[in-house]
Length: 448
Image 1 (tube, rainbow, N blue to C red):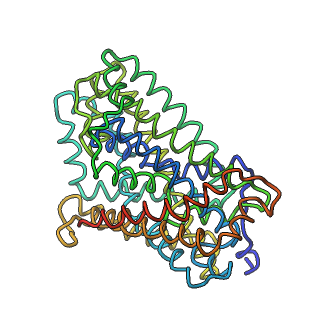
Image 2 (spheres, rainbow, N blue to C red):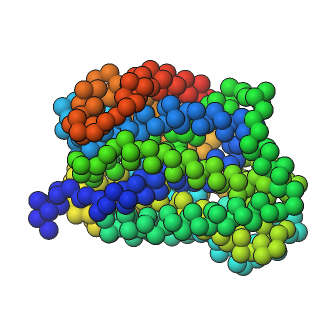
């Protein structure tokens, strides 16, 4: 393939495809695994209320800023700032590429592998183990078996690579057009089953009736972190996806759809989980083990539980892989642009590198290796979520709000052809609200 063909910028085949892909990137483990356990840990509806406010006033403005940078540059995050005349700010692109395309994906595909393991186990013995009180033991035995954890990590990453090899239109967009509708169908089925369980109303009340006395500093920090993690901000994804957009697309509308679909899935996940947890008399504040320890117990106690268990972990797998393919696209697009590689070569080389980077995280679940007293998995997750992600989001917001605002307005209005009635509010958010909020989470979250 000639250099010209390698460097030719791909485009989304349709506006719907782009929205589903961007929403798929945002809709990931953060919505269905992380969001529910934070709700359970941080006081239920009070956390949900804070999360929604942060998503509207910080998450949406930053996402719109990242889309604008990407489309204006038509480049990967590293090269984007040079292309729009601000090479000094390329630090944002480097942070996103390293944190998103490599480090985040290296531990993300480990958890993605868990979803495949639990899909298989749901049809083969998981219900029997959980029915006799061995749910935690089952999970512990699995993550302690390094060979199994690595094998499922590699399988999950191989499926991600398979999609990304197809490119933007034939790979990521096509996959999201199939996966996203299926994800919503499965979610609705699980919600209907959960809400019809005896005693489900207690869980709905916990989820929807805020008790503001439960608001703490930790609640605010968790809500800020969850919004950024869920929306895939600060990881180079939205800049990369924006770079594949045509100049005729409406960025404000696309961002609204992406944020709305992402938030909707997170909220629906709560309706699928908390009514069932309370109906079975279980504790919602089980932390990260809610999906892999508590919910299998719930499924084992309900009619046709094996089927609903399989559907839930299939849902979790769909959410995980739509995000993992977007993270990998950051790395692959970087390889294609920086080294002039063909897509297939970039996907294979960088995919293998990411698998190797993920092996220490997979192995650390059984005790070693560690970094400064933390399991390698926990240390990498901490660095990405508490350092790289907020720093990248902060810099992108400051750059657009204070150094690139006139050009941003051109992008958001398509050169003045479209209206953006919330322009003044958005400017205030991207200049003041978002940087201050992000700085707060960064400073307050630096507790190793």
